[in-house]
Image 1: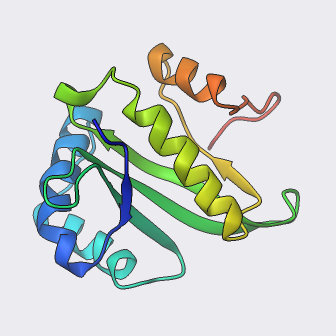
Image 2: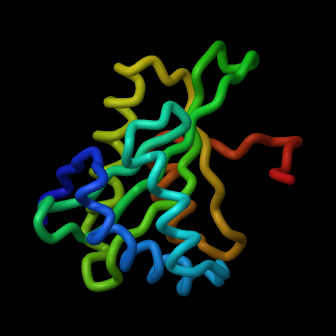
Length: 145
């Protein structure tokens, strides 16, 4: 399985929307088709606030990752947050997620991102182990609110 990533464009909405729907259903996020389409449109059109990447072959992607951008004085500038990261269940467990994160972190760093943040749901020990293995650390004394 190729863990290649491709920056998504407006033409990719038709591929992204079913995966976003699947992720939201799996994660318990209440959303509707119109809301999802409206949320991704600016990112697909080049908004400076974030970007979406397709994972795997562009014609038949196996997942997506959404990164949003902000500014952090503590991190020294542009920072990113992994807003959503989805890989089809049939492809999970093959190292694709790890490959994607390593490739994307390198790409983001080359683009000037000084820090990359993410959230892991309590109980998702598998994901937490993967993130720790590639260098993410828990910020002690802090909680996301």
